[in-house]
Length: 212
Image (cartoon, rainbow, N blue to C red; front, side, top):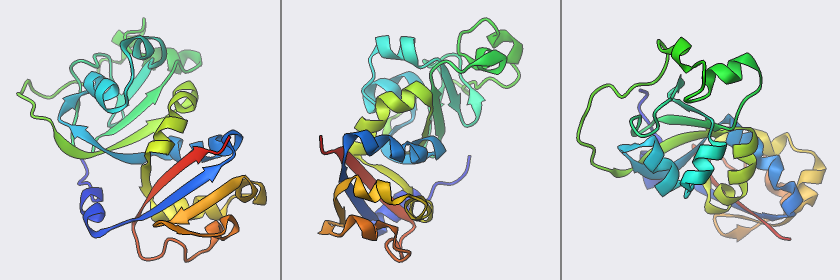
């Protein structure tokens, strides 16, 4: 597993970008949720506990919506056994279409056919939960369901990637932003695409909420 740099980066500081925007425009930020974002959370815990304790999901939601789970690029069948560690990458999706989607669905009919690539906890061990960092990727209905709440709470993304995202936006994106601050200082929404906005930091905390 790759060594994770975000904890140290947070100690030395990162820029916080807060956006208040038209609620209908919030989904324009979902691209960063699909590409992968980072969150501080408890680690050394099961995927099931992470979904419930860190993301606040109910058993009913997990059963109905979280049909496909990847942990470090491997499909997960048993969310009660798979362990979320420091630096883990966890991808969550509702049912994906087609044969590939059916094959990757946890506890699905085709699960036995992919036993060679399915994630398994390497060894039984006593877990001691601790504060850490996890990378999340969200897709389709799960992204739409959880996106607004996670963006309001705040997600961490690579500053370079977020800068490129902002620079790539059409003027309609900036027109949908009612208020914008960087490290608590108000800026004009049209200035969000400036090349130097996120200069000097490796990471950016992004927070966004709907204005109506």
